[in-house]
Image 1: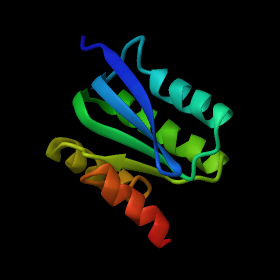
Image 2 (image 1 turned 120 degrees about the vertical axis):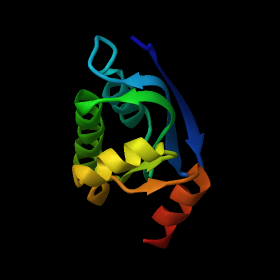
Image 3 (image 1 turned 135 degrees about the horizontal axis):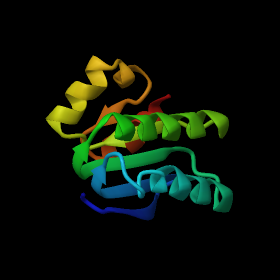
Length: 118
């Protein structure tokens, strides 16, 4: 089972969560929302950018974790944007219609530009 590692980096007025490993059922799965909660308690970013370009596997539990991240964003009134999803992940998001609530961007810079256009 791939391990999960998450790094946090300020990016302008947003916060970038970089996810490495697998977003799949296992003991480490809840770490993404835990890390995001810590960030939101410590600072007030304009958006959460979740870079999943280094995610090797994603299953239904991982999709659930992304939805939990979205709900966390709603509760804090900030957008949650995905960065760098693999083609298979993009297809899963489209099939489950999560692409409507979790917009995806190729790069963090592109995601940042999108929040400043709104």
